[in-house]
Image 1 (cartoon, rainbow, N blue to C red):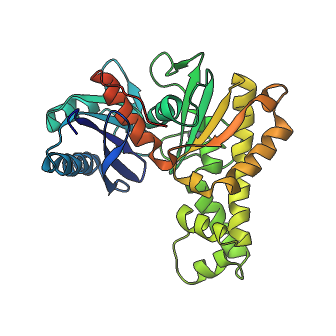
Image 2 (image 1 turned 135 degrees about the vertical axis):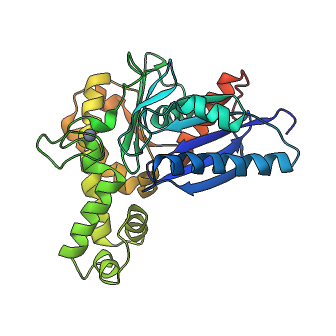
Length: 328
Ligand SMILES: [Zn+2]
């Protein structure tokens, strides 16, 4: 690795992923840490620990780390590098960029995690070549990324493209964390919403695989629901289809507003694949306007749950002027 590499960090609402990435976007080492249910200093320590682990692995193999890029689930004041608002993590008011520069001793670049995911998919992945594109990352919450007229959009203060907080059911369930709203897309089809709906179905249908897992004391989370659905359990499939339809309601709004070439769905929940996307596409076909709905492609993220980490790395590569081309 004579050219050196960067470290991309995707700080999600429940876990963080750090990876050493070279200018061709190959990943050389990964570190994963939990990030949920802890205070601010514990989250920041987990970030520093994960970066240190990856850096040690690279430098131990005589490689060189030149910068670190972060995607964090916060609204970020880009001029000052301060996290001004975070729905699902205790990072409000934290001068994240300065803090990490000081603790890591490397150049640091910071953006919203869904923006970095959008960047990776637009530059190298499923939205390659699109002039207008949107991305939804379905995890603990729902992040949004937007490319309009060939440029990534962050809004006038860097707080824009929060597509997960568009309302799809006024008066619906309370949204999460620090969001004061009801019936946001995030409240209807995030990984958290999937677990909630699956738990309800497990109780209603005790003879299903989902019901038996619940009776056996297993935690009903997105990963379990997805696994059961891929094994053919009807209740798990129905839970995913239900949130897939809500996803389609949200995408219909995006299609009508933006007339995008492509809408990318990423985050942990996209492990459900077509079980999630087919109901979403059916909803868009029923609700959205022509010709936009015939034009748009609704696709899974090429990089799956790694889009945010790879995009954070791409941000850092851009920052040090080492942007490369991905093979293939
Ligand atoms: Zn909300």
